[in-house]
Image 1 (cartoon, rainbow, N blue to C red):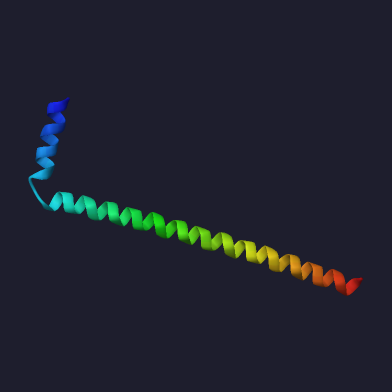
Image 2 (cartoon, one colour):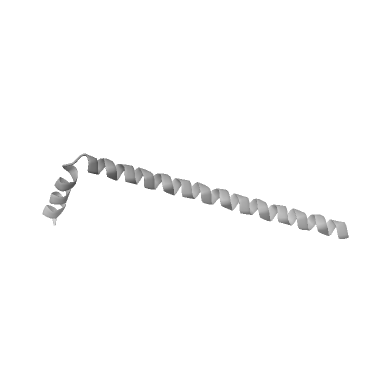
Length: 66
């Protein structure tokens, strides 16, 4: 098993483009996760503000009829 990992490591590290490509791929994956998380947080904040505005509108209409 160790020989298999060693052989694969040699095969992987012989060409300098492969580790660079893997690093770029990992960097792009981390950026995508960060971007998705920030977009998710923005949407949650927007939904919360919509609920707040809805509650204010309902309260305003209830005040009209009091």
